Amino acid sequence: MMKIGMLTSGGDCQALNAAMRGVVKGLTTNVDELEIYGFENGYKGLIYEQYRILTASDFSGILTRGGTILGSSRQPFKQMRVPDENGLDKVEAMKSTYRKLGLDCLVILGGNGTQKTANLLREEGLNIIHLPKTIDNDIYGTDVTFGFQSAINIATETIDCIHTTAASHNRVFIVEVMGHKVGWLTLYAGVAGGADIILLPEIPYDIDKVVEAIHKRTKDGKGFTILAVAEGAISKEDAALPKKELKEKIKKRKHPSVSYELAEQIFQKTGIEVRITVPGHTQRGGSPCPYDRVLSTRLGAEAATLIMKKEYGYMVGIINGKVKKVPLGDVAGKLKMVSPDDQLIKEAKCIGISFGV
Image 1 (spheres, rainbow, N blue to C red):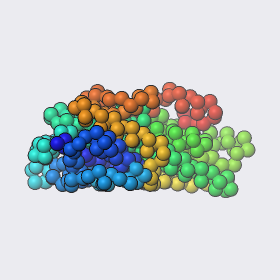
Image 2: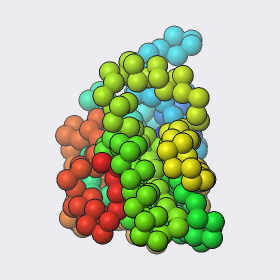
Image 3: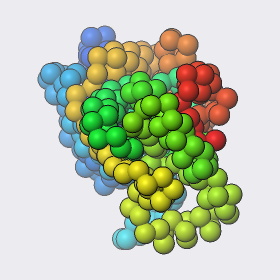
Image 4: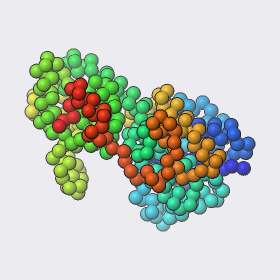
């Protein structure tokens, strides 16, 4: 009897269900006796023994369903070694649940923080397979994560819709896209949506250069400007501050986000009306796009193959279009950032998109 555990952790995104379905279909097609334990609400379920036994029928009809049938929660990696309010050692509790159930492998779906805990459990002797999910596409060791393309589609559609109203009113519009530390989503949605200015966390902006780009469009007879701004975009002045000072400054910020601060600065310097659109959590919601359905199915199938081969301790990723197993220890804790020299950045600059520098 093969016994497999599964959990989804961190912020939800499209194709979590599709990825789990890929794992289960891969196993049920090839394994005669199989038990699947679904841990509820991420690592919480593993810590507090909150799970349910699932069958193949639980994974039927979920290919197109967003969210996660197991539920999710955020359990910060830095808190994993800190006992809970009752003094429970979380790591020991997770190991105990795993061993009590006699699991052969635990499949963990999540982003960077989730991956770090997955690697910790690997180091503690558990058989782990990690599947990389995040709309941010910031997981090191894979070219793309599931959820990314679906989020691009939603953010791009938002920018598309803004175009008509921006043109009608000769305004500056800011579309704030998710991404605190990494700007892949903003970069791709900005290029796909025809944004005029794209501001990313990795490329600190100069407000005067932003204003200069707006004035240039006005001079060229363009009555409106659209900015795609990552929620983690940062000015050159703020980027130069020590981390502690920056945190204090952000705490005291009167604006709800960088987009509102930008809007005020642009209005003060140009007198042009600025409007802000924040698609927010819609970028993580809804049905996965066809690309993500295929991607997550491929990753799930490869995870099933690794489990059947008893090859554990890997993340399953995509490298140069091929599904690859990547040692968790090589990638856990690393972020895949946008390089200012990235080819897409250069191409965007070539067609006149400003990055505020």
